Image (cartoon, rainbow, N blue to C red; front, side):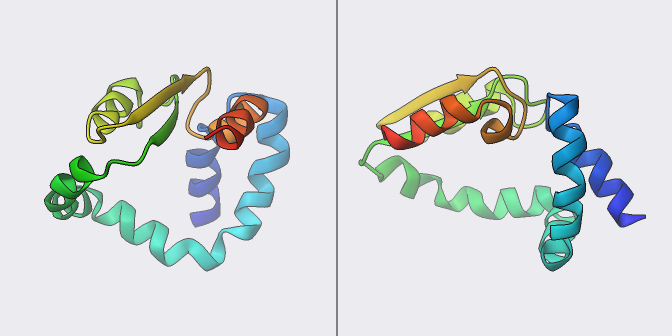
Length: 118
């Protein structure tokens, strides 16, 4: 049951059906060691986020450049979330790619360029 739920949830994060068919089964096989952390985060995501709000002043004082790369088509960590996240850093460099949640899968060349030129 957990592997089917994981496959369904993670599968929605990848745009290309062919890549999804190839990659999601591999991710399911690699998933067991991370299951406790994954399910714990999902159980208390709101609580986790609220506890972390106390760190916002630290982020605003962080002055080195920060490159932020989000998928513009991510339904959860969407463009609005990306903009709010970028506002936390004084020197944020925000990039919204034509991707869902896994920008490195949907737009590997562009994500790699952004990482290598940071």
